[in-house]
Amino acid sequence: MTVICIALPLTMTVSTRVDATYRGCGAVTITSNSGDVLFAIRAEHISCPRARSTLRNWGKAGYVPRSGPRGWRCRTVKTFVAGNGRESCRRGRARILFTTGV
Image (tube, rainbow, N blue to C red; front, top):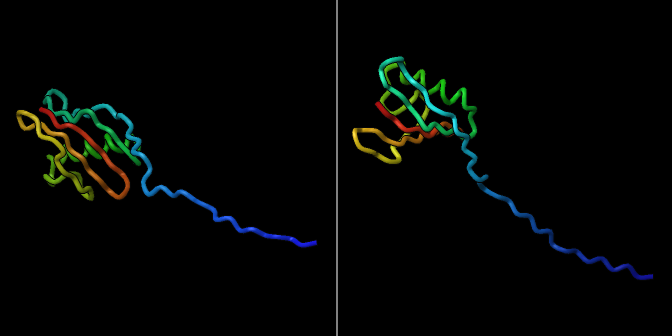
């Protein structure tokens, strides 16, 4: 009896990036009665409470540093009228998107 073995190549698909799954996290009012608010907050790879807390603490510190919360790399994605803008901040895999408003 003759045994024949055939080796078939296994194909594996490896994705280099998982589709973004941003969660809507609402808005943060920095100080009551000031109208200073960060809204349309969305988070990826970070919980909503932590994202809101990070932004609230940054606002209470007078938005210092101006570049975004400490340890985060931020950039303006879109600028609207009256200085409002859509911002995107990254820290490792974590991302926070938000709109500034006064």
